Length: 282
Length: 344
Image (cartoon, rainbow over all chains, first blue to last red):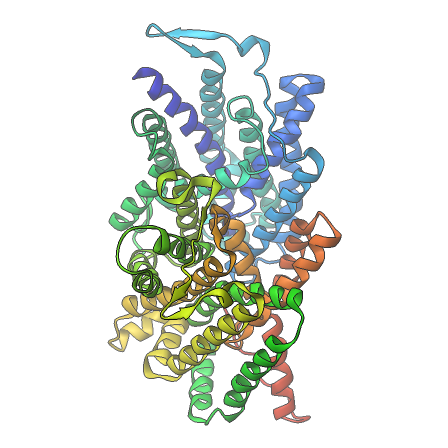
């Protein structure tokens, strides 16, 4: 029971970190990044390659930093140039980016599965309530919460965080007040992509690496953001945790149905509240 | 302003007797018949597959044209059609003919009901939701091994006779070519008639400004859900033909790569004309055949092509034809006012 809850927490916190990248970009750009799953995958593969050579910590840093860079390029090349177009145009373009990135991953790393061992310090097992629990999974929970906290504190209390919130609320008024909104774009999309990269490499020792991992997780993070309400961190947190628990308990008690549960949950919640858990009524 | 412009234009168009279009439909049908007589099985087979896939693109493009919604999950109805064929011939229940006739109306009805729910979300939310729903069906198809055979797929045991006719032709390139083309033309004519009807024009009005249409006293939700249902029904025809022709169905037909390909075909063709997505599908299919023979990187090429078309040429092939026609009509006069850019 406790182990299940913890497993759900592991999965939920991973989903939350990934989805918060999506939410961050949506807030500022009003666009859902369909290449987010591919960024997650790219982060995992880059981190994996670096981790094999220079150790796990270097891998995590490299996965995050490299993807931050990719995000900045993505904003400068795609989002900025298309910001006056219909949002769906940008959505389809990011879908194209997704296809390109998936091809890159397949060409560089091949289509086979990879597994990454957790670092030696975290490879042990911790006794929780009399049951053994892998230490690395606790690390995932811890790392995710630290990242989420940093993000929340920055957005709430930081000066640039305030700018991001202002520009998300109304970009033209924010610009009139002297906020350099043109600089915020690359920063926010870069940060969102870095979050995707981090969650990819942190998830690598927990889930295996394969070229379909990007699309699998993308769909789940979409479910998280749709259930939570587009552009809401609180909603994303709530729904990620909910989804994590459902996944964990589902695999134990309803193994046949477990993979379908997220979709059922989404359908039910949308019939009840089409704007999502935290979204304002349309 | 743009909305009114668009409306008045389509009304004006619809009062004119579409003699050119009727001739076009007949010409395409005849040349298809002629093509089927030739002894080119390879080319005919490719064409038959392209036509089958064009139903998928047609469904997606029709939805874009009529509602402005972009679906990332039309592999769902396509796959349901394909699995429907496989199950119609293998499972217990009424005669295969009855089952076969029920598939397409069944899928249409199912997605009409789904549409009532998903139409509560606009734009991006709708796109994400369709992707998730499509993926849900894919997961279901791989998990319920007892019914679908899981990832191994399921064979279609085609009866020797259906409706009193022999079925060999359905699995031969030239037979399926004619069969798919006739269905395509029937659907085309039907949709064209619907577009010109009162309800069709109302749908366009809702696309342009839903609030205003509601203000005029129309119930907009059900109609939009019905258009969504129809568009999924079109995709399911492709699935049925796919199942009949290939004789084998696996979860591959439900992957989101399938939905994405359909979307790319629809966008490549553009939605300026109803036939845009069909042409897009044929061009896309033959390009892909050629690319996969010559390179391993067709996924990247696909992605780049999608980006380039979307950015530089958002109205696609049919948009180019529209501009050409407009220029011909107005002679050397001023270039006509650009129509408002649609959702895709």
